[in-house]
Figure 1 (cartoon, rainbow, N blue to C red):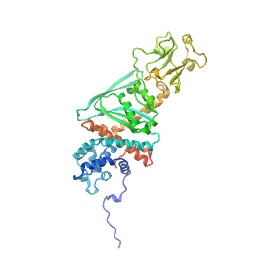
Figure 2 (cartoon, rainbow, N blue to C red):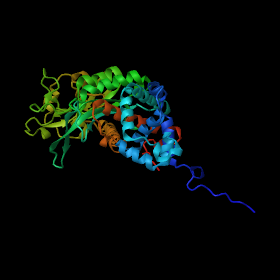
Figure 3 (cartoon, rainbow, N blue to C red):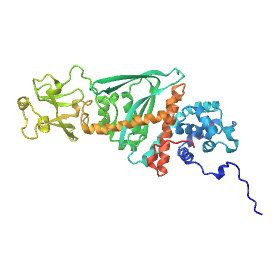
Figure 4 (cartoon, rainbow, N blue to C red):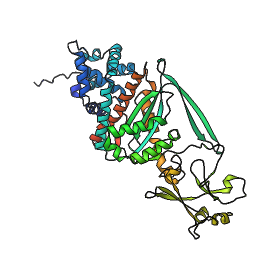
Length: 442
């Protein structure tokens, strides 16, 4: 008589592991965490190890990868999900009792703060590996800052930050909206095509955006010279509008700044191109090069016409513009004033004007700000908005409960490290189209 053995109810050996857990394990295994674990093990040498540091570290990273904003949520998930406990390395036979209590995670978080330099080094190694896997990583950059809100607690080193946003309504009126928060500020430099972080810094909430741009670019050059060498363009909003930074980006780093200029000329809307000579060519407050086609018109919108931008001449370091009457078939009522200027050539092409970049490095860029090419390239900047949203809603920064700036730096570094490690794991799994996919616990 045959004997049929009774199978153990819900034995893990009888079921295939879920795909999300397998991907989570691959991501955790992709982390270059050897030096960090060795440093943590040396500190614990000779002491009882009820909860191994490897398990605690993998649980911390699982918290960032799965989007658990609080450790209480992570503990609840670990107690519920046996597969997740096994992926983090906790003893399977112990069941829920293998999950450490909250105070163990709190102590471990404070220990990690003392090894923040090693976590930062892991991020740099992860970025370098991504640079090898993605040959175009770093070609298109974007920079921005985001609020790091502190909820419930009031750290002594946190401040109230204020950021102003401009929008244009249907009538063309510009509206300004101020948003304030209590906490810190994250300055971030990313690759805008793959939406991956490359450099970052946490500062006080009152810190301006512009002074942090070049330190991040210089850090990228020092830490990731291969990725920095690929950089071609950098997009950022008007908060980074600084002439010296734009000149430094282009002259010393070979990066074209895609940073729109602010309108600073409130009192004087149009300035002559050459103040020493009488001419019809003027410069607008945001870099428009215009010709005065109607000298007796009071309305500036009708008196001036934008000249046609014909590109950047790298050998001359000048921007080239063409007569708007010849380019757009406009009626020009000021031809006599234009003809009186010496060396003006007549013809169907019309007058050509060249403006050197050194005329104003804030207004004049190799990609002219008012041109269509600038507008198309500047759209890549929206990638950093999506990265900021994922940091908040996917990796848990929106609900981070911290009590100091070092604690916030730790949360940010783990979230960015999780983002890079997840992308690396998907690419090495031959599924690069999934590199921004959210990992979920089954």
